[in-house]
Image (cartoon, rainbow, N blue to C red; front, side, top):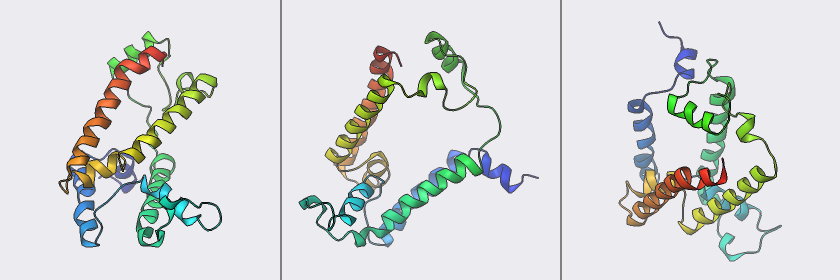
Length: 187
């Protein structure tokens, strides 16, 4: 008999987690909202601060209409905390042979944890890369009017053609970066 703890620490199969994510779309339509994503929340936080700090036209709206989105983001953070700390899988990580070979090519020992220090140490090069990446992601998210989850989950399912273009661009950029840019940078 599988315990509840064992069920929570093992990965859920796609046929369970996929429909749960998919149920978000009809739920959002039922509550009268057609957009879903995390990136909007930074805009909402700036709109919340507008009387004291921000006087930009973009943030001049009633953020209270999007309270559910902020609650959702807090729930995502709490869910990540639960999944990563409280219900963390105590088993050592299992990597494919292809990943182990790629790490060996880059002189990185097989990691015993998810964030090996050889990759995630905060030196100047990594800090600059993280800062640049964050700025580019923020710009791209704002320019595309949403993030991957917003476009892929609700944008495509509500037949918004700009979401199809955004998702194609996001995945093409990710593939290009993973296969061509990171090897050049030696990451």
